Image 1 (cartoon, rainbow, N blue to C red):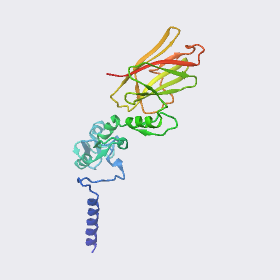
Image 2 (image 1 turned 90 degrees about the horizontal axis):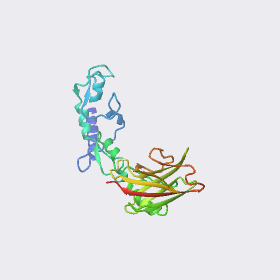
Image 3 (image 1 turned 60 degrees about the vertical axis):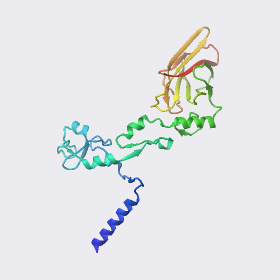
Image 4 (image 1 turned 90 degrees about the vertical axis):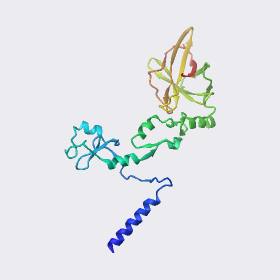
Length: 269
């Protein structure tokens, strides 16, 4: 009777597993301990080839070399016996990009997904307004800003000079390209020797599309100018870095409480 019950239980379990299979033959599995697929030595996700010692401890190829082919868990030799079972598991695991909720449809192997996510063009960006909690891809953010905050940005056209007037107490200004809806963040912060003006583009770090800009501050026949490429940020930044900023010395505009800037932005070729 015990054998019969055991057989029935195994049959039920197999049926349960089969019922979770998708129509394309895939099987959804939940790992209660994801670290089981980490290297015992460097604790990073395993990548093929995977080696094991005679006691079954596993390690990635580079760690076997670093450990001089001696298993740190039991001191037995490691780096000569492949662990084919784990390699088959690694080959079969496919993960969706963590930016899937923002529109990315990429599904890749466990050992490749991190590289993809570091370059994913759907990397989320947050709305640069203090009182807004919206987060989405660059495209989603552009649509959101047009719909919800259309009067909160200075609209400009590429390759066309425009003027920005900053008053005492202003810390930033949001610029929106009329051509494609791309958002730029103009920071204006107090430094020891003056005010630093920094231009950034709101977008993913991996973006291949770059934008050049020129900022000019003019007064009494004197001109300060900076021409550079806008770096990508993913939302509001309170304190921009001084490097890559146009530093306007104190008293450059005399007793005026306003800072007048002439700006031009254009796509880099």
